[in-house]
Amino acid sequence: MSKFRGVSSMGIGDAYQAGRPGADLRPKPTRSANGLRLRSRQFITFLLLWLFVVQYFERWQVSSMIRSCRWKDWEKWPSGADPHHLVVIGDPQLVDNFSYPARNRLLLYLTQRLSDNYLHRNHRLYHQILQPDTALFVGDLFDGGREWTNPVWYGEYSRFHRVFDPIESTRTLAQIPGNHDIGFGNGVQLSVLNRFRTFFGNPNDYLVLGNHTLVLLDTISLSSTDHPEVNKDPTSFLAALGHDDHPAKQYPRVLVSHVPLYRFTESQTCGPLRESKKRFPVMRGKQYQTVIEYELSQRILNSVKPKLVLSGDDHDYCHIRHPLANTGAPRSVAGEAFTDEITVKSSAMTGGIKKPAIQLLSLYNPLDGDADPNLVVEETGSLVVSHDTLRSRLCYLPDPYQSLRWYCFVILLMSASFVMVYIYPDTTARLNSRLRDRLGVIKPLYEDDLVKRQSLKMSLMDFLLDWNVPEGRNWKMCVLHIAASFAVYVCILNRYHNSI
Image (tube, rainbow, N blue to C red; front, top):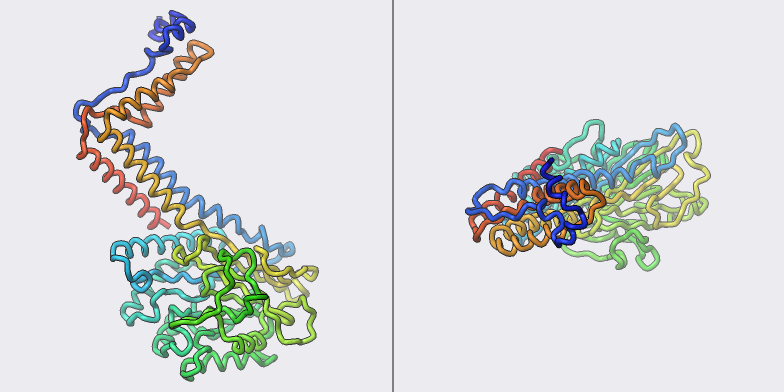
């Protein structure tokens, strides 16, 4: 007769009347004489938990959020359409020594590593999943770019291209400067401006994408009134765009400016997708201005007459509508009666917003008629902004601090488990006994069920908890296990950061 048959021969009822059902099946908690052995099962349990959490936050969550923005789910073009797809990236503002001057070097280094990884990881995944034709930056590529000497700036330039490494088959447009790149208005130095446009390209230019004209305008230099050598290029470029026979007027236009155009915040509100509940700020300070001056904004709008303006600088989302000079066009015609402006959210985890995002833009203009002649142009505030030849959607990125909170939680939980075993062995042993007693009292339907259930539970609990408790405190082994686990966790996270 088997060992288990011998134990159960007294009968199920007799076993429960004895008050310790199946007690012979539950192994007693053990106490290790020296506690010096490697707690491999405890180590592996938390290692598996760490791998799951890192995989979820570094890959699965990001991919899932970006897949929810797939073009086909929202652009709604006619069957057979071949639109041009753009990803618009707002204000990455790479963290540098000017970002947090009060932080020590170690904390600043960690901030740079985490923020660079957030930008780079998202950059790789939205290119991989969405496969855009063009990536467009709307300025503030650096944080202290206007302050750096040439040798330091060159290093930051190389760093920018490591974070946003070139993607084959995707065109990158990054020539729009922000005030953190070159300053603002009369604060712009010609040498700093020339350095930026030498490496990133002409900030006053236009190009045709998807039968639309993308107009790039350096409104920061255009705002300079004291330095003709700074504002001459954008001034002459804008003046040329005012002529109806300019080649850029052949197609519907999308204007790109780092600083938003002027708006009357009492009537031109940003809509429900803006995080801040305060009105859009209209102010100026050292080397910044939150909006372009009213007269200059009107000159820009009525010279270019764009369907859409894309701007950055503010870091939070804002969608407003600018009326254009009266041309007799129907009120619903974008680019003739009005212009929509979308201030795109920052894509960085250090942008001061809870939900970083990118802006998606789909352009489709078949030239043989309106792309969607029956489209009803909605008021501002929609997740998808729709016009007859273009669509734009706000696409959220993951909460950058949620993953950090989970990483800290797993590390604290792992540390607490080793502290319990090594520093409070008596308490751990009592807890072990209570858990075994509590989990072991399960009324079975059959004798074999008793054996299987208790054997499975005890095996699982032994593996997960590894309750081989040392007889006395052992700070050395506690610190050793925590340090070894932490080192492995950092290596795994670093591997994730470097493998994408």
